[in-house]
Length: 375
Ligand code: NAD
Ligand code: ZN
Image (cartoon, helix red, strand yellow):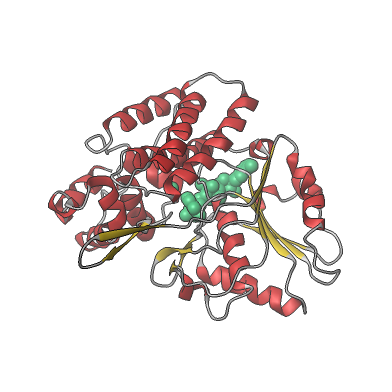
C-alpha cells in the first residue's frame, strides 16, 4: 500500500507549486491463459552467465503440484518454497538474502516471485536487498533505496492486491509494518496467466478480490482523486462488479479479476487508499489479521464513509455466502485498543485522502474506538 501523498508541494513566497510524481510502471507484461510457459524464453534473455542463477520464490501451496514442474529452472537455479501463512517480514528477507549470498559467488540473474501478495512482496524486497547494504528494515519508508534492485519478475497466482503493479513491498519489521516504497521496487516483468489462480479457495478468492474492490472505492471516493486514478479505478470497479455480482463463466471471471487487480493497483498508485486500509492496518499490527480479510472485516462497518461501496460489498458477500468473523475486538483491553487506534491514526495520508485536510475534526480516538468495538 502506498502511504504517501503523490503530490509534493513546494511553497514559494508567491505561489504554491505542485510537483507531480514521476511514477515508475512495469515495463513488460505478458497476459494470457498459459502464458506462464513463456517464462523460460523471457528469462533466457536475462541470464547474465551460467553461474548467475535465477531464484524462484514460490508459494508452498504449490508444493508437489504440476506448476512447480513447469518452472523453467536450469543450471544452478533454485526453487525456494515460501509459506504465505503469515505476511512477509523484514528478517525473512534478510535471511533469504544472506543464504543466496552464501551459496552463490555471483549475484543472481534475477528473482522470480510466484504467488500472491505475500510472495510477490518478498521477491521485490529480496531483489532490492541483493544490491543494497544493511538490513531490510532500514529501507522501510519512502525512497530510501540507494541502488537499483536486481532484475525481478512477478507472477500472481491469486488476484486482487495489485502488488504486481505497485512500487511498494509491504513488510512487517521490528518496529512497524511499512512498505519499501521506491522506484526500484516495481517489477521489471510481470506474467499474468489467469489459469494460475485456479485452485484458490472461495473464501480467499473473495478476501483478496475485495482488496481490489476496496482499493477502487477508497480511491474513487478520496479527495486525492485525479483523472489518472479515476480512469483505472472506474475500470477496476466495473470489473469487480461483473466478477462478484454477475454470472460470468469461470475462465472469463478469472481473466477479469486479474485485470481488475492490475487496474486497481494503478488507481491507488497515483492516489491513495482510505478508511478501511487505515483501520485494517491497526488490526493487522495488533492481531496479525491478514490484509484481505482484515479489510473486509473493517469495510463491512463503514457505511457512513462509503455508503454505496458497503451496500455493494454486502450484496457480494451474500451472493457468495461469505461469513466474516465477528467480535474479534470484543475481548481487547483498553491498552490494546489504544495501540490499534494509534496505528490507524498514524496513517495520515489515508485519512486525508478519505476525508480531506480537516479529517482530525471528525476522526478522534473515541470515534475509532466505537468502530473497532463493533467489529
Ligand atoms: P497471500 O499471498 O497472502 O495468499 C493468501 C492465501 O492464498 C495463501 O494461503 C496462499 O497460499 C493461497 N494461494 C495463493 N495462490 C493460490 C492458488 N493459486 N491456489 C491455492 N491457494 C493459493 O494473499 P494476497 O491477498 O494476494 O496477499 C496479501 C499480502 O499482500 C499481504 O502481505 C499484504 O500486505 C500484501 N499487499 C501488498 C500490496 C503491494 O502493493 N505490495 C498491496 C496489497 C497487499
Ligand atoms: Zn489493499
